[in-house]
Structure formats: C-alpha cells, structure tokens
Image 1 (cartoon, helix red, strand yellow):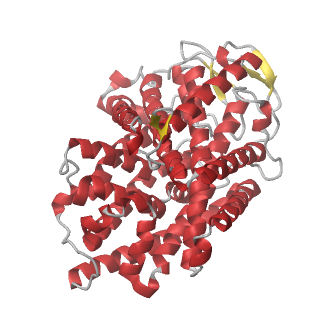
Image 2 (image 1 turned 180 degrees about the vertical axis):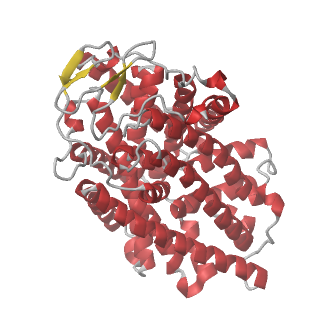
Image 3 (image 1 turned 45 degrees about the vertical axis):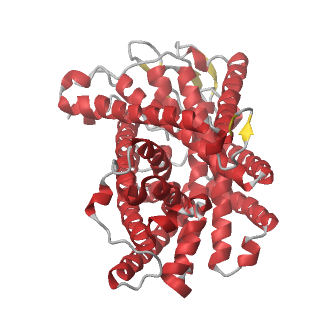
Amino acid sequence: MAADTPPETTPRAATATAVPAGRGGTTVTAAPPGTAVPSGNGTPTAQAPAGTLTPDAIGFLDALAIGLNATSPAYSLAAVIGPLVALVGVHAPGVMLASFVPMLLIASAFHFLNRADPDCGTTFSWVTRALGPTTGWLGGWAIAMTGVLVVGSLADVAVGFGLLAVGADGLAGNSLVREALTVLLILLMSWLCVRGTEVSARFQNVLVLLQVLCLIVFAAVAVYRVHAGTGSLDAVRPAFDWLDPFGAGGSALTGGLLLGVFAYWGWESAVNLTEETKDPANAPGRAGIWSTVVLLATYLAVAFAVVAYAGTAYLAGRADSEEDVFAALAREVLGGWDWILLLAVATSALASTQTTIIPASRTALSMARRRALPAAFARIDPRRGTPGTSTWWVTGTAIVWYVVIHRISENALADSLTALSLLIAFYYALTGIACAVWYRRRLMRGPGPFLLLGAGPLLGSAMLIWLLAEAVADMADPAHASSSTAWFGLGAPLVIALFLAGAGVVLMLLRRAASGAFWRERPGVAPEAP
C-alpha cells in the first residue's frame, strides 16, 4: 500500500536530523554530528554537537512497555474514574471507548510520520517539516511543558500510595515528608534516565508487568464479588449498554472525553525513543499504536469492574478525591489485601515519573540540534548515549514547578494537571494536521492513503480541537477549577495554560533574535510514492 511506503528513512543514530529545505519537498539530510548542519535555505549553520543517542538500545516490546508506563494506567484510572462517573454515570466505559478513537487516529499519524522522519523530537520535527518552524517550535514547547507540569504530581502520587501500601499512613499524610520524598524520587528517576536507555527499559518492563498484574487481580476480585453478591457497596450488574458513550447526553460527553484523552496520554513516549530503538522507522510507531489498544482493553475491564462494584453514587460522591478513590476502593474490594491495588497505583505513577521525562528531554535535544534551542541542550553523554543536559534541565524545572505549586495548595497542583489537557490536545491536533499536510501529494492515490494519511489524522485532530475549544470555555469559569478561586477573573487551569503559552512565545522570540537559523527552514512535502 502506498501509505506504508515512507518517503525517506534517515536513522538518527547516524545523522543529526533531516531538514526540509524547500517548498518543493526537497530534503537536506544533516551531516553527522560534529559537521556543519544546513539550515532551511541550504546555508550551513553552526557545528552540531558531538555524540549520538545509543542506537538499537531497546526493542519493540521494550518500547511498548515504555509507552504503556508513560500513560500510567493505574494512576490515570484512579484520577479520572470518579469525575468521569460523576459526569456520565454507568456510561464511563463507553466514554473510555469513545476517547480511544482520536487516540488511535493520532497514533496512526505518529506511526506514518515517524516512518518518514524517525526523529526523537516527534511532533516538533514533523510539524516543522510540514507547517513551518514557528508552529513546530510551539509544538515542541507544548511537549516539554507537559513533562514539567506532570512529573511532580506523578512522583507525589507514587510516594503517597507507596507509603500507604507499606502501612505508613501517618507519613503519607505529612505534606513536608511527601514533598521531600517526591523531590528525591524525581532525582532518582532522572538519574536512571541518564544512566542509559537499556537500564530504563529493564526497569520499565518489571513495573508494567507488576502494575497490570495488580490491576487484573483487583478487577477479577471485584467482578467475582458482584456476581457472588458479597460486595460491600451498592453493586450494579454490568450491562452491554454501558458502552454507549451518548447515554448521558452531549454536554456530559464533552467533559468525559477530555478526561479520557488525559487517561490515554503518554503512549508517544515509545516514539520519542525512535533513535534508540531497533528498526526505528517501524517499531516505535507500532509500539505507540499497540499501546493505545492495550490501554483500551485495560481501561474497559477496570472501568466495568469499578462501576459494577461501587455503583455510581459512591464514585460520584468522591469525584473531588481524584486518585484517593482507589485507596478507598482497595479496602472495600480487597480488605487486608488492599496493598495490591495501592501497589498498582504506586508502581504506575513511579514508572510514569521516569517515562514522562523522556519526551520532554528528547524533544529539547531535537530542538537544540536544529538550533531552535541553545546547543547545550543537544549534548549527549558519549559513554552512556543519553541526553544528560536536557534531562537535568527538565528535571530541575519540574522540581521547581512542583514545589512552588504544591506550596500554594493541593488544589493548585490539581489545577496544573487540568491545564495539562489543553497542551495535550494542542500538540496531538498539530501532529494529525501535519500528517495530512506532509503527505498531501499521496492522498488521492487510493482509499488507503486517503484514510490513513489524510482523513483519519484530520478527523482525530478535529475531535481534539473541538475538545480544546470546549475545555477553554469551561475552564474560563473559576467554579470549574479545583481551587474554585478566580485568577485574574478566570479559572486557574486556564490561567496556567495561558501563562505557559505566553512564556513559550516570549522564549521563541528571544531565541529567534539570538539565532535565526532554524526559522530559515521552509515547509516541505513528502514526495509522491513511486
């Protein structure tokens, strides 16, 4: 099929990047690190920093595990199941199914764009190729900021549930202890990232198996107790119509879909490791697609089990507790074995703390190689083959953000996570649009290319843009924020998102004034398939 034929494949282990140099789609492949890198108009820019990421460090299954762990299934379910049920009731599994549709379409776009350009900067590199450097820079900035926003929260959840799992409830409730342990955990996970991709992959493989096993045990026990009539809450018999996402009405569906998008977010970490994966043009993209499929099965199974066991009133009444609802359910379902589910959430957040650092650091590396960021961010440890400088910059920024927001209030930390959904929808939508624009010469070559390269990605992008617009309108009302406090007359999540967007524009303009080489690049187009 023409859609499966990449226009070119440039392994980044051997080269710095592929730069679209002209409007006609002519691509200039950058020279190996240490040589002059052509700019968008063919004029050589400064020397590329020496060192490359470690090629063939991980395989398809490793990438799949990293994609799953970056999504943090147990933590994501714990965080969204209460608010989701409050919105749509028993139709929560149906909304999780509906949320899967745009994710699969965007994952397909990631796959085909990665075949054309297996670059660790993913959205940044692809959007730059198709839509131009300014849009590409903003897409890369959005990815980097998602890491900054969420790493501290993930580590905090890992610490809290880890302490609960070992019975240290008093320490889990001590804010200062949790904050200190959270910072130490972020530093530890960053150190593992810097130590080497192989080390990270082995660690992730263990955590994903442990996490999934714990979730399966929990779901199985919950469903068994519902059918046996031994549940302790208001059990509801599962029904097939729970899979209808429209059962609760249109307005409820909008909010539910946004929660679902957050729950699926993170699978693209597998693609950010493309330069370090065997068969970089194919394996990372397939790992991303399969991650969404595995997540769908996991989410549907656990959502059915949780709603059936607890009932809608119990879950909706704890919508504001977010992930704490799983701590309560663990005791209800498993009794003295509640540590199983607590351990699942702890390992889920722990794994995601590490894997969420990967997209931000690799995106910063890719941006620096193109001179969109200072060259220091492109430094790679010659012995370990990892981007140490960009990793530690992301880590430091994430720690500062976590400590400052955490000191403001727990609600402010929740509001920063809500703002995260806007950034996610933004750069996912950009990627889908970039896929259709980049492959526009191929769209009329048959139904396969038209659907896979054009209509599918554009449909996924349209759904995400619609959700983005609805979310902005909703977040403008301070009553919908966790803090319920107006910041400059708007909801705190929207203010946080606007602040980060404004900061990105300012930094982009400053970087353009300091070094305009990147902004001389011109959008290109994939050549027609032979």
